[in-house]
Image (cartoon, rainbow, N blue to C red; front, side):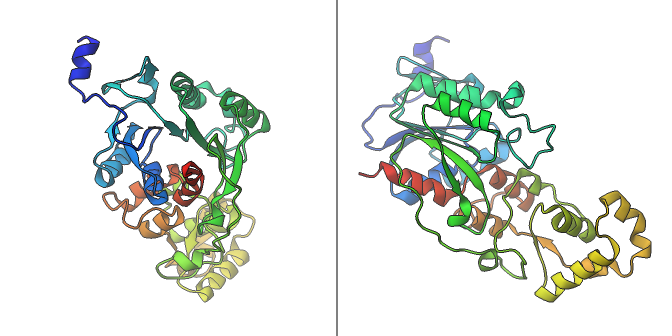
Length: 334
């Protein structure tokens, strides 16, 4: 099939809509579209590159007019044409947005796996996104990644992007700790507002001993199954977020753990369970609900309702804190 035939099979895009034409790479569940809508910024066309089925499912459920363009590795732009594995589109692109996978940058990874851009397989999506950005050369762009990456990686990304990043922790707008870097040429003011939202404010029922939840991660979609294992990971390692039946319930769990298990590994704890009193004290601890996870990312309530709780945890862990993106996008408003 030649180019002309492909383009006839797709509507030819033009600038008549009056809104922005957006290309979102590694789009996930389209947090970008929520942010544009919430910021009051008109979008004429929104092209979304994503291959994760559950992310695409959420996007189609909430934004059925999204133009899905498939695998980022197969996207090219030349002479006003966006070439994708879903077809070809004659269109200008006003803004490119992306947040490439951050696992090899994150401090949540084991130190031997936190290799940043030296891992070409894991960092390849950033390189591909940056290539597409340079091919399009749009008027505006922004890119998000973890804040606590190696300085060499941050400097390398900044050199390629042509700007230094802004560092924003989602805690200023939500009940979640999520420290991120944002590289953008959108004229954005410093964040000078703290919404002072605490975790206790957004949970549906129960008690939290923390002011903020830990950053949502894709691993939250693979929860541990026993209350004792859940508490061990939460209390000893500081990972994930647990909700308790009450403040007294938390204190009881803490006292029991400190008495029998403090300083022990998960494997050591497992071997001592039979000699450790009544471990039913941990019964009733829970992970955050789907609605609570949405609130942590300031996502519209019910946005992920087409998914199970664990599927929602997956895409939300990959996603953006929407109100942070709204702050950035408001720099487009003259």
